[in-house]
Length: 373
Image (cartoon, rainbow, N blue to C red):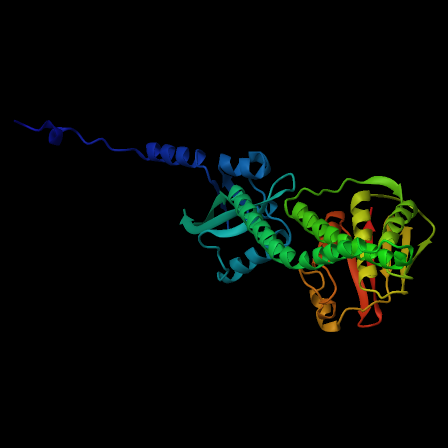
């Protein structure tokens, strides 16, 4: 029996057929494909490139490739290409380097860029393959946030098991002792233990509030929602609230420097920042010491200062002050989580504000917060 397969004529593929196939592959590629000349001028792009960067074809062809770059890459690109053209020794990107692209609307996105250099018709061109990794980056960021949140919760459980023990023991012992003081002459003793209970409850509340605030921040559940309000009125409200946790003979003084009083900011975030700073000033100051609050609104800028005469921050500890769970070594015996200032910093990041401080050990601390609106 004869196998006719070997007698079939061989069909050749013409150059035009091959070019059509290659063009179809390029046009339907998931990744962006772009070619530029030696000066960085865009010569061709495929549909995926247009989709990724949000440009129509006629707005890219003939333009410098730096149009697709954010600063500072955009400004330095011509200098880089001129150097390469003059010396032939530029650092041509190889395979799969992660870079940032800039869309027509100004938004940025990450992608992997591979560039090859070739000669066509005695002309040097560069071909770039653009692989969008936005979704991959989002997944990685989400996993990192989940990991950080898991570590945060684990750290909190460890910390809470230690920090909760002392105030709960204090509450239990004070309640037990109060039940024994029935006579009129025992009134001072009862008040003493009631105050101990209040202080312990405040410590527990502070620990829980710190953790819940940080947890919400890590989950991205806190946003900036500005409204117009009086900074004087808010300061008075917060001070009235803080008066309930003052130590014996401590005083809070508030001074507002004119000319303005109204602000357009997120009232809840400002309240939380003020409460955190003032409660710290109370906690780290001794009985009988004054706490001074200064507010100023001018040129759409809120300035808040909270000044105490307390234990101060050792110089060697100041660089770590806004780190999560950090506590200065002279505060080891004072209840706290080490989260308060880290939370303030995160609130100010949301508000596009900043915080600074001046402190000397045993001579007090002044925190200065500035928030534009």
